[in-house]
Amino acid sequence: MILTTMPLYRYTKYMLERKLKHFGLTEKEISVYLCILQYQRILPSRVSEITSINRPTVYSVAKELIRKGLISEDATGPSKYLLSNGEDALNNISSQYERRALELKNSAPELIKELKLLPKQGKYSIPKMRLIDEWQLRDFLIERSAVWAESALARDNTWWGFQDHTLLEHYEEWADYFWKKFSKKIHLNLFTNKRPIETEKMVTKPYSVQRHVKYIEENSEFTATHVVIGDYILMIMTNEKPHYLIEIHDTLMAENVRAVFKRMWARQNF
Image (tube, rainbow, N blue to C red):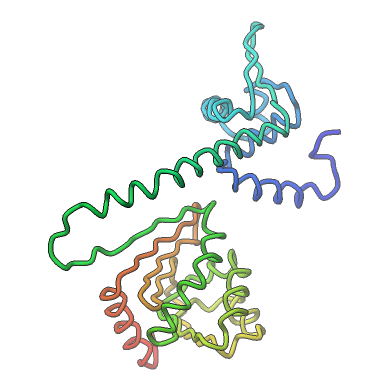
């Protein structure tokens, strides 16, 4: 029986796609991979029809899946078929990550030692910046929560900034996690869009008393989130795909941005 005829297909497909993203597969790679996995042996042109991905893209995606060991190509006949290597082929990717992680772990101490030998000029501290792409973002938000909270507690215990409402629409479970752990210590002062996620849902949360929001005028709208907490500045794009986050760790820059947001917050309207 083809997977598309199974009950609860949409939910199953959603969960599969979410888990496959953790293996580093893109959305197109996931669509092509699942199609080939279902049919076992299929022409690229047929994959294109089923997935609505144009044929040249199917070919390029297939090459990447072959490189990752998830599928194979049968070119023995007049037409080239794409073949599934089975579900267990995902172990190939897992093994690759494990080998790479071990290599990094083994090389890091020596690399750090060598970097410390480099001569340092002046007293300027270079800001630390990180770019987190969508497939890492959900885990990164959870993992960094304690770091951001600790930094906030060393400053003024407050998130400052403006928020695109889609951040909560996509990552509400992160907000629940953060406030469950730190709601008694951290406050939030944010400007945001007046949308149901805020006006109807977030106001019912047990930690709503710690969240202070001001809505901007209806004829304008935030399409990205820009906040400062402690010594960290976060810029988060969730309004369109792909989602991403930029983290800047810089005490002086964070203090200046915080001062701007405090002045804005003190005004009656945004």
